Structures are given as C-alpha cells and as structure tokens.
Amino acid sequence: MLVAIILAAGDSRRMGTPKALLPDPDGRPFVARLARTFSSAGVDRIVIVTGALHDAIASAIAAEAPAVATECARNPDPSRGQLSSLWIGLDAAGSHVEGVLMIPVDIPLVRESTIREVVESWRRTHAPIVRPAVGERHGHPVLFDRSTFDALRHAPLSEGARVVVHAHANRVVNVPVDDDGCLVDVDTPAEYEAMIGKKT
Image 1 (cartoon, one colour):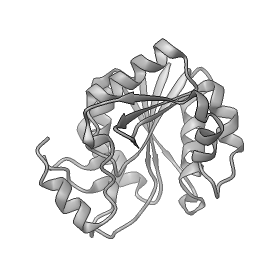
Image 2 (image 1 turned 60 degrees about the vertical axis):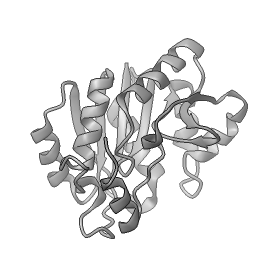
Image 3 (image 1 turned 135 degrees about the vertical axis):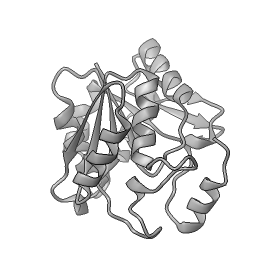
C-alpha cells in the first residue's frame, strides 16, 4: 500500500488566509487540489495532517470528494515542526504501508504525472528515498520507503526528515521531471501572486 501524506498543520496567515485553504489558480483550496492530484495519480490512501484548522480542512476535503480513501489526522502541537506532522501521518497510515509520499501543503502545483514517475521509479529501483528533480533542484513529493520509517521516527525534531535523506544520500534516486510545480513553495504574498499567474 502506498499512502500520500499531505502536511497541512501550519496556520501561517502571511497571505491573509492559512496556506491549506488558499485558493489555487482555479479557486480550489491548496489542500483540496493536492488531494485530487494524488487521487488521480493512483495512490491507495491519502492522509492529511492538520492542526488548528482541522475542521475547515476536513470540510474542504469533503467538498472535493477524492476518489480514494482520505482522512485527516490532527497534530496536537504543530509548533514542534514539520517532522512531528510526518510522525502523525505515519501513525495514521498504519502498519501495512510499503511507502509514503510526503508533501507540504504549500507546494500545490505538482503534476499527477510527476507523482506517477516518482512511484514508478520507486517500484523499479526499490530505493529508500525517491524524489523528483528539475535540473539540480529537488522537489516534492518525496517518497520514503518503509525501510526508512524507523529512522524517520527517531530523527531529531530540530533536523527534520532531511537528516534521513542525508543519511541515505548515496541511495537516493532523483527522477528528472519537466514540472516546475514540484518546486513551487508558496511562502510569501509575492510567491502566491506569482503562482496565481501561472497557467495550470
């Protein structure tokens, strides 16, 4: 089983609206757009890790009605950092998971084709970590094989998942893709305005 974990526990309001609920160029909340994209890409399940906005995110997902089983799992203390949300997502994913595709909610423009290419590469190579790449830049989602789960669970919160990526550096598979959307991290109003101007 392959599970997508969308990290949406943050409550940043730099754009006036929390990122998970910001409208994409089509007017769909970021979190709903990502749920639809992962659903279309053929993952088995989707787990959305929420925080204070749990109810609003759950409502947005219910309105989207993804074609695969989707659940929201609340992080009781998102201030611990992104890795703490990944832990919540791993717990919600369950014990029979072969791998997880992790993506922050503020990278909403990743293409379905990119997700499929990452998954196909993982199934072919059995690499511990697979991620898309545009030139020398690494994007999302990052696929973590179940062989990395224990290391992720024991990684220091201050370092995050990157410490696990660095530990497997010689075995990470970077999948070349033609998808700038896997790199577009919306952190500021200027980045949001630039994203809204993109044709998708």
